[in-house]
Image (cartoon, rainbow, N blue to C red):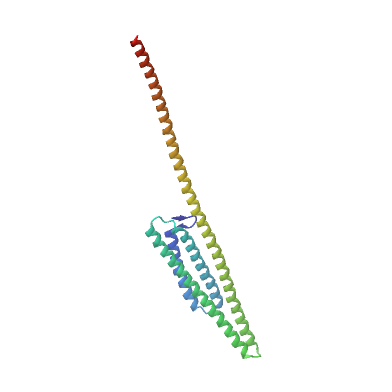
Length: 221
């Protein structure tokens, strides 16, 4: 139960569990951050970890199907599905956080614009809001790019798993054909030996019959 460059099913599962715990802690810390710059960097990191968990789930999904024992296969199936569900839940929580931040920034900017102050303080406040809004939008764009990259990677892994299953089926068929050919060759050799034995018996019988006939003719004289 190993995957090239990834590890065994158990190792991938343990790695995904550790990432889940880290991502959950980072998401809770993200809720407490006040700085837009810090929150942007952390939100991108959380999104990246969630994408990595989903990639691990795609790898594990191809591995648990190869487990020979059905009880073990069903057990790993439930474990992988649980990891995938938790990753989806974290992604939805992050999306809700990003939406709240975007909505908060829009409301704050609208309030600043309604003040209509003529001094430089209003411009300064609006500039701060614009910078934070841009930071949040940049984080959303980075998150979308990570999701697209994860989806592409998952599709490649799924295709690889499908091709591997096809190769396994072809290998089994080839082995069946080779076994059949081996059995056929054995039967042909047995038949050839039997034919030679039959020929020897026939010739021996003909010689024996000829000897008996000659002996009988001499006795009759």
